[in-house]
Amino acid sequence: MSGIVQNNILRSSGTVAVSAAGLNWNSTIITGSTATVEAGNGYWINTTSNTCTITLPSSAESGDQIVLIDYARTWGTNKIIIDSNGLNYQGNDDTYTVEYNTDGQSLNIVYSDATKGWLPLEDDVTAEAPSPPPTQKAIFGYGYVSGNSSLTNLVSSSGVVASDVTGVGTVRHGVAACGYGEDKAIFGFGSAASKVSLTNLVNNSGVVAADTTGVGTGRYALGAASYGNDKGIFGYGWTTGAVSMTNLVSNSGVVATDTTGVGTARIYPAAAGYGTDKAIFGYGNSYLSMTNLVSNSGVVSSDVTGVGTARNQLSAAGYGGDKAIFGYGYTGAVSSLTNLVSNTGVVAADVTGVGTARNALAAASYGGDKAIFGYGQNSGSANVSLTNLVSNSGVVAADVTGVGTARRALAAAGFSTSA
Image (tube, rainbow, N blue to C red; front, side, top):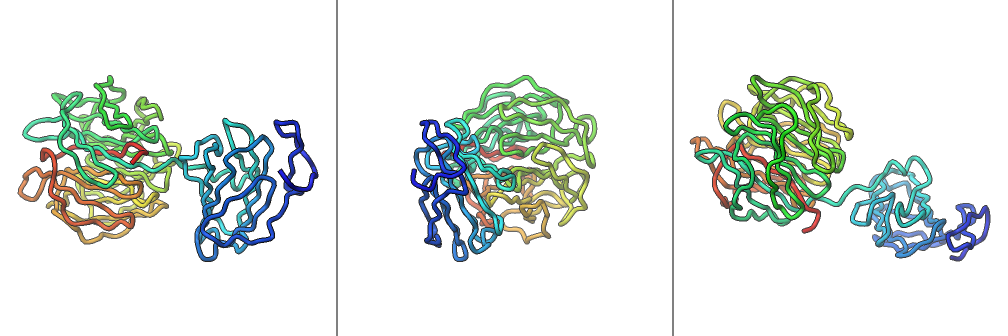
């Protein structure tokens, strides 16, 4: 490492590393879309015209230090992305996304060890923890054909639905599903011969496991979503009446006992993740449009006055990396309306529907930043297997001819971080 030695700390090799006060400051202001930086240096990063990806050294020793400064105070418009180049960053490997997007921000990082890797020194950037790699594939599962089913259909990272996979676990409908553990999924609850609370885990290659004895009150017609980057939540539904209870899912797929419900008890809501680490429940019951936000620690907030046409038996999924979409459902007639959700959890007004109007369908994220709606029941009360893809800007595409057995009251979730 080059640089002026000042206010030193010891490196693992026994040599002396440079502190921020003694860094070599690069006199060339970085304006490009990519830059490779070296330990012992400070850099001015000007993102006036574009986002910039900063590649860190591929090897480092304890005490190595790098400082990055928002030269033009434009990181809020064009962020910087940190490529940790094979090393950990705040304890996460380099498959995680690390971004800084605050105007006037500075980033002062020091390498600790192989476990934690690069660590920011200031509180304002420590909060910008890495986010996990995006979900690439999805799975539709269970539902009602002419009877209960446990069939599944995998969705590729390009949104192509595969043919039926013979079901695993108890056949049922009215189930819910969500991602957990960053790259896996879980189906839970539903109506079989009676209302159940059992679950079925899905590994990161889309294989569904046998039943896990249920935790919590058996119910059906509920919703589920991912939150906190690697956990999940089941909520609401029908036991002997509508309820608002929830059950958290750990990052290892363990379902917790009932949490006393918050918000209006209801059936057939929809739920999705938004804002990278939060979730939202919305709509349901006898035509509601209210929503309930879920914090990144799994706490459900009180009712938020609804936006858009009240309905039930709709579905929802995340898209665009940090937003969500509610779509379709039953208003007294089947619908194809959608409502976008911002990355702060604000629900937008109705968007005129695209595709076949239907209810009792499912939706999931796929392809890193897109979503898919699929299956359900049309206006003639017939089960369908068609799908509608959602772009990373929230635009719903026309019907895609269905693959797999037509069914309704099924569930879907994203899984896998590998395309």
